[in-house]
Length: 273
Ligand SMILES: Cc1cc2nc3c(=O)[nH]c(=O)nc-3n(C[C@H](O)[C@H](O)[C@H](O)COP(=O)(O)OP(=O)(O)OC[C@H]3O[C@@H](n4cnc5c(N)ncnc54)[C@H](O)[C@@H]3O)c2cc1C
Ligand SMILES: NC(=O)c1ccc[n+]([C@@H]2O[C@H](COP(=O)([O-])OP(=O)(O)OC[C@H]3O[C@@H](n4cnc5c(N)ncnc54)[C@H](OP(=O)(O)O)[C@@H]3O)[C@@H](O)[C@H]2O)c1
Image (tube, rainbow, N blue to C red; front, side, top):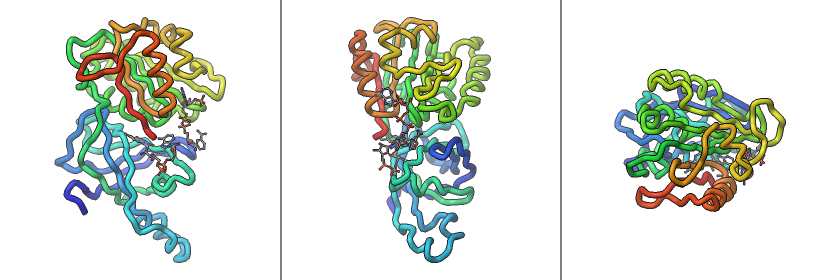
């Protein structure tokens, strides 16, 4: 096993829907990361408890090989445990196995953190507002950033727009509400984090229903947030579905925004596949 790879133990698991779950694992003491970064997680299906409790015939079919995938860290850099938010892809090599995780199972963690979807990439002076636009599990890095007090101190408004197909796939709603309350109180501004839920395949009261690029172009996202979005006032981060990232990036560019390079510019992105 490479020097960077450590064994971690599953401490808890939360199932949101048949296709979405979260879990926490032990955090190796030496492992440091910045909010917004991702790691590579590994699973060896044959070592999962799920298979150990199956008949020999089923258990023998479980692959005895380490499979790794990139995962954004949900928890804050200050937490004692590491949290992750995962999709389940029925025929996906990794998640078709990971979905069977149970408390006490072991995973592999490559302790080299990666990624530039971090607020440190933006040079000062910072604009007033931070816009965090996510689809699906692309919410993960933003939850980590929102648990870092520095994020709350650096911007006047933080808009979190989170798009899912259906209402039940909008995970972490209570966490977001708690962050609004707890960090809002700490910075003496309960209205600082503006949450805009988007549900695209159901009509839900209180949620927008179009895709992010359309919502930017027709102004409904800015209207719902209650603030303007322009080149001088905002940093915009995009994370999740690569088609959303591409379409939204182009839309933002048509509004005059530019990609962040060497610390300057508005837009920073992370594609999940
Ligand atoms: C930088 C980075 C960070 C990532 N962070 C996360 C994360 O925090 N949580 C997470 O669930 N995944 C994340 N992913 C995706 C993850 O690495 C795997 O692709 C995912 O776990 C599926 O693995 P798989 O082997 O089951 O399917 P794969 O063979 O990897 O993917 C099969 C197909 O499933 C779809 N797909 C893959 N991932 C997702 C997803 N997250 N949401 C919706 N559809 C998807 C795509 O259509 C993809 O082509 C991240 C990817 C990258 C590059
Ligand atoms: N979600 C499910 O019910 C479900 C069920 C079984 C399997 N899966 C698997 O999970 C994967 C999808 O997971 P997911 O629902 O989390 O991800 P997703 O398809 O990326 O959808 C998440 C959100 O992103 C939006 N979106 C997609 N493309 C966009 C674009 N170009 N611009 C703006 N917004 C865009 C979606 O809107 P739209 O609704 O308009 O696309 C939805 O609101 C699929 O590969 C599928 O195999 C999902």
